[in-house]
Length: 206
Length: 206
Length: 206
Image: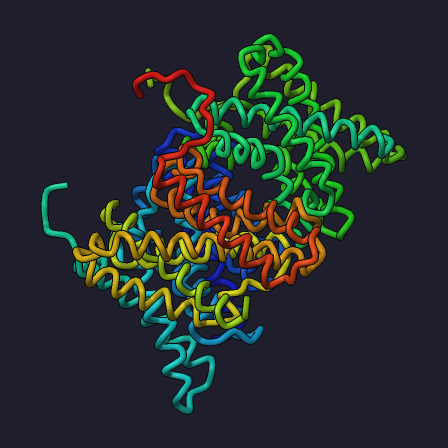
């Protein structure tokens, strides 16, 4: 895909993630500062962890567009917090795009500095998933992603497909796009049909 | 301000933060090792996170004075734990100094390696506030700073004023001092008058 | 000790730590992805934190043997989860070896890049202990190591002895081995005799 489009989708993801942080923080009755911080870590936590691990400069510190987008999103989300439920579908759409783009951006960032595929898939998945993990830890909950939601599995699948598709004579843009669409499809189907990972527990009432 | 004075105030802050860690750990009935670690992360957690993010060497690893001060503080705080309540005012004074110095040190450190003002204000606030956030996470609580206490807001205000004051022909030492005093005043007044950030919640019994 | 032996013991520790992560995650009824991540952070969390702090490349990202060992361990541990209780002693043995090796590897890694002894002892202890701390935080518990288990104390003792022994004309291999054995002995004796750190609390029913 073109860099411009990727950038726009990345920003869409940041907005969706920030809003998810705002909603979590409001549910925990945090104050304005708390809401801002949770919005922040949800949106940039995964990418930050990735950058620290692969020893690259932390992206949002070098490009303040992210800080600005998150602050504006947080202010708007707080002002219109009672209207956010009407945005359910749009938010889900943005969120799913965010996950797929974050995964592929994270994967390619590690790939570009020479990490092996296994590590790239891990950093991609981390970029998409760990913002939510840090959000839940700061809100004193077990990260939801460890319990249900095959969200992470969609990211891993997309990452694996990225490397498989590269075995064929396809342009990188095409591979990127297909891998994105795979993540989006798997995630959407999973939510629609309520797919879960196979459980290892006997079904009992929790 | 002179480097010597800043250093002394920094150490005062480290002591106050370590004691706050000790108190939290004792309240959670941790053992001696737990108390030491909580004292540690409270005192150096914010600065550590800042250094990792801006890719600078982690300061307490290169200057063992911090480790020594924290260990001695922890031992003394444990020995005199029943007397700490008499120190209420002194501790609050040290703590407030710590917050203001940590903010400005963190801000200037990021500024010196070329980050833009928005990022410097964020790293300054982080230096002052994230030790307490990590302390609360390790003690399995929602970070208090996300709920009340306009502590972080004082830091942000001080950081913003630092850059506004620099628009005037003032020496850096003077700007540093004024910004420090602003943080100290706002924080003290906030505690004295029980200021809170404007709430977005309807007032109900929690 | 020889590098080969250290490597094998290191892998034994990784396996034991990953299994401890799997058990914690299963107890919290996490799904397969959650179990994998908890196994991961338990096994490599301490070393990762160390590498970030001392600004060295994160080891498991550059040597995928760790990722593979953890994935295989997790799959096997899940498959044979009902049989793990029979492995109690073996797991404890591996775990104790892991702690001692992790401590010494962490200590020497910091020493090799020029950090002072106090910092090296801290990074060694961190390598051995913080995987478990992150595991417990992700599982929304107060880290067990802050409450009981003199595990960390054994690591600190071993680290201190490493530097004391180096004052004598002993080869590094011998010092490494003795320090390892000290950690293993202290930890085993502590568990056997139920040693605890001296408590500062009056004994009351919790």
